[in-house]
Image 1 (cartoon, helix red, strand yellow):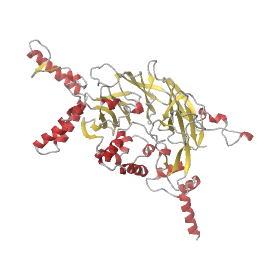
Image 2 (image 1 turned 90 degrees about the horizontal axis):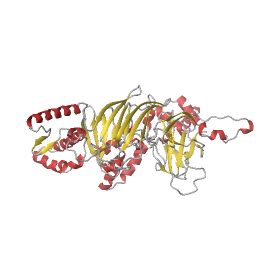
Image 3 (image 1 turned 90 degrees about the vertical axis):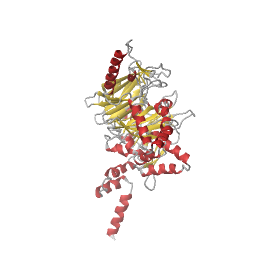
Image 4 (image 1 turned 180 degrees about the horizontal axis):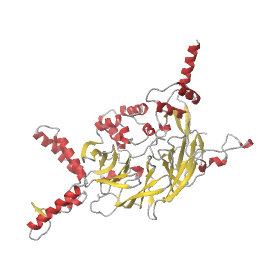
Length: 555
């Protein structure tokens, strides 16, 4: 009887969500192999940011985000000229005698009680502004990448040689490599008369020490390496050329052609006369545009891959010709007009490139525009796969291996707990419930396009906070999620409920003033969660008013 009572008590203890019971259970039981981190993360069910300080007295800054290691809070000045970096620290205060109460003292309700300013450094010059939506961080050596640009973009820009018509122009875009420990600016990379989509890091992707920057205006993917010394080194530029020696080869070939023409043409005009078509020897130097005769190296690789794929579908030559007419030549100009929208690394050698129309490339919402995806091998300069955004094959890859699309190899362990439908049963069930509602083939097609609309992922766009782990908590994803985006503000608190029985409400996040908003003006809200501590900021943005900042923490 005593043994049975002891076993029953241990079983109850093992199922208890009490933090003391969990600590005791951790001492007497060893978790199954490979689940030690999961077991440790369950403590976050007891350690939650359940206390809120409303309308905190804080500097009038634009708070961007916590770094993924939680060491820094990045913010910008209101004039978009200066970078201000803070170090998070835990609230501490003391009281004596009758002064002690359940309420925090006034001094503890200030921003400075939670954060210490490390430095303030000027990034932008007089005619430039910091791009407040752009920020990338390298945890291994604590480097950060910021961007400044002249504003506003020129939408009716004059056509330049090699530029894509319809893409706006920014006179100067500067990428700054900075060491966050002390604010020292280590290196810069400048683009003139170009356009890089910096909103939510869309036009830039960081993988380990490799940085990919997409020039929309000149359709070039610039690959840079960030050295440990703090230098930005050009590795290659993919677009007009694919290999490092392509330009040298074409220049030497053009020179030989010109020399031959000087010998063959009496007036010594360096123009080739082939069946009445004039070919300028310098034409290969120009990036593709609608009036260009030559296609870029990347576009030629893409067309060759599509051609070979259609050719290999049939074994009979006559059927091959018919298939090529319908699937390749009929859509040839559509393929030629595709431009690069986004790029992300799949590994150190493969890029996932998203193509589409010019209108979709410069639009904030490209979900309604047709898109294509290509997997490009930088070493062999070959296209190894090509899909349309309605491809069920690509969607199946996305459903089963979602983590491979947005988790880099160099990320620490805790970054691999960002919930997705390929690593979390609750997210997968939610996805399947939406998928089951697509009854007809048309609805299924729209569903696939919607799901693939998020591919390619924006770099470092999701918070690794354990409070967004869907195996621990359930919350309304329409109001809050791990994705770094502004959302419509609500006066109702956002509830975080445990996934374990009895599905207890653990804490609430209420943005805005404690008494609610006095008017019905449209408001935006942003949430900044610390990646490991029970600490979060909710920032309510109201037009023409100073932001309302709340701090949510565990007392």
